[in-house]
Image (cartoon, rainbow, N blue to C red; front, side, top):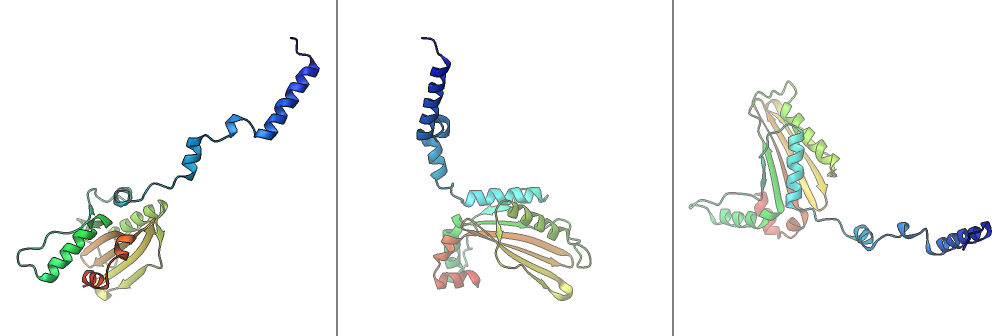
Length: 199
């Protein structure tokens, strides 16, 4: 059958009317997989993710590789006190909830009179972490230790983790550390356990 201009107009009108009723065609309708992707919760942020972000930030700042550690601690020696054994058992239990990083530069020529390169490196690590979603919690604390040096502490948070960054500078020595802890693990501590960790 030949399509006349009148028939063509009717066909276009019918298709346009159907599109108004059903939407703009199949391409505009999300597939079940697309719906699932938009409603699914984000992937968990765990110890391995924290370690990877900390290592990447340290590498971007020019710090040596291999300075991060999952969990904690060596076992107490044979002469350990009851308190030391309790502390060791507690840190072992909290091990899946912690990531630590520590850097003491080989060049120990830091001077309180000039720029501290290792502190600048820690600042670069923290800037990289901020760029990847870590948010500063409260104000940083910076103290002078008189003629002995300086002390710096800052706290950052991301998706249920808290990271405490510290830097100490002495006349011939400096050290940067970062300790990330999973909030849910540490929120479960009893008062006695919290006191044990502080002492």
